[in-house]
Structures are given as structure tokens and as C-alpha cells.
Image (cartoon, rainbow, N blue to C red; front, side, top):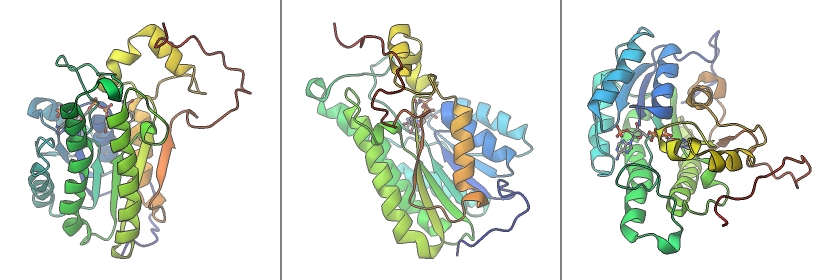
Length: 283
Ligand SMILES: NC(=O)c1ccc[n+]([C@@H]2O[C@H](COP(=O)([O-])OP(=O)(O)OC[C@H]3O[C@@H](n4cnc5c(N)ncnc54)[C@H](OP(=O)(O)O)[C@@H]3O)[C@@H](O)[C@H]2O)c1
């Protein structure tokens, strides 16, 4: 049973056994280092062993040796091996941060911002497979381990795009909305087992995923004009919110979708008077 915690520092995770997916770079790498700094023992997953090893070096600086459990979540059947590998190496599992995710991409890896009517079914299927089917598969396999933990918690890395309309990113947005729905359903279904499940919904964050956007000045400026705080989020800020959600500080928080977006989702009726440059999508 997930109970009230009376630890002196409710933001510590000392000894917690943690699996972070998408830990090879970007938000996932920051999450891994931050949770290790808080005392977590980490298992790291992604496709690229060399990049995972670099994250493990950073985790080691926090005083912990991370376990590597590489896997390609485009094949959701790999989720079982990732979860069971992590649990076997750590002696169980208390926390799952499922962060791996993709935008539809061009062959060179840059984001393919294409409206649904111009996109192809294969692209939709690939995004659904990595972002949604793998989420369900990971949660399904993790349940057995988490239900044996006295402080079990899951964070699904969703997105602002799962909450607001996101033209040109329809497949991505649909899967991110589905992650929020899954977090809510599992939160209720698993509550009496003591497993908390929440979704975290970052807005535009400066990582490889968004490199083709945050390095394109007219587009970046236009997007940031729609963020009341007027800037990109940094991965570290997403990691701190993740730490809150999995920590004892959030011991009564479940089924929540936490927006971390600099105010981007707040309707302002235009009263703030923030000038919006012309849309780069309208020529
Ligand atoms: N950046 C943003 O603006 C933003 C905003 C809201 C939400 N998010 C969400 O935050 C999460 C992390 O995004 P990010 O910006 O840090 O992205 P990123 O820099 O592109 O990193 C994505 C991570 O996912 C892993 N990954 C990708 N495909 C995978 C696959 N098939 N199997 C296993 N792992 C895979 C990547 O590792 P390998 O390539 O080594 O496999 C990498 O570790 C995503 O779920 C994203 O949707 C991002």
C-alpha cells in the first residue's frame, strides 16, 4: 500500500529502484541524473548503448552505478525484456518513468511536421507503436513488480500536445492524449494496490527532438510568442517536475496530468498584450 510518507526530506528517493526509458539523451538523461542525485538506483533504457553509457557516467558521478537495459520499443514485445531486465538487476522496481517517445521524422531524423491529410499510414503506425503501444506494454509488464513495492509510482511523459490542438503533429498529439487517458485509468485501477500513476505534460523543451524547431529562428520566435513565459523549457526543469511526481512529496497525487508549459495552455483572451509575429506557416 502506498502510504503517507514521513521522511525528513520528502524529495529524497534513497534506495528506490527506478527504470527510466529514453534515458540516452534529452529529457530522459536529465531525469536519470536528477533521480540518481535524489538517491534513486537507476536502470536506463533506449536503443543506443553508447549514449546510454554516457548517461551512466553522469549517473555514476551522483554515486550510483546504473544498469543498462537497451531495447527498441518500436517492437512493444521488447518492453517485457526491458522491464524484467531492470527488475532483475535492481532486485525489484519502485518507479517507472516512461519517457521514450518520438515525433514523426524524416530519414535524416529531423521532425516531419506534415498535416494529417498529407501524411502516410506507416508514419502514423510507427508513432502509435513507439509512443502508445510501448507505453501499454511497459505498464502491463511493470505491474507485477510495482505491486510488490511499498512506494510504487509511474510517470508517463506525455506532452502539452496531448492537451491542446496540435496541427502538423496529429499522430504525436493523439498518442500523448492517450497516455494521459491511460495514466488516469491505471491510477484508478491500481490505486488500491498502492501504485500511483501520473502524466507529465511538458511544453516546448530544448532537446534533439525539437532541434529543427528551436534552431529555426522565425519559427522558434513565433512559437515562443505563444508561451507566456516567453522561452523554451530546459530538460532539467522537466526532470525536477518528474522528481516531484515520483517522490514521497506527491504521496497522495495520482491520476493527474501535470502541465509544465510556461503558461502556454492558459487561455488569456489576448489581454496580456503579447505581440505575436506573423505565422511562418501562412505565406
Ligand atoms: N522536447 C519537447 O519539446 C517535448 C515536449 C513534450 C513532451 N516531450 C516528450 O518527452 C519525451 C522525451 O523527449 P526528448 O525531447 O528528450 O526527445 P529526444 O531527445 O529525441 O529523446 C528521445 C529518447 O527516446 C528514445 N527512443 C526513441 N525511439 C525509441 C525506440 N524506438 N525505442 C526505445 N527508445 C527510443 C531515444 O533514445 P535512442 O535514440 O537511443 O533510442 C531518446 O533517449 C518524449 O516522450 C517526448 O514526447 C518532449
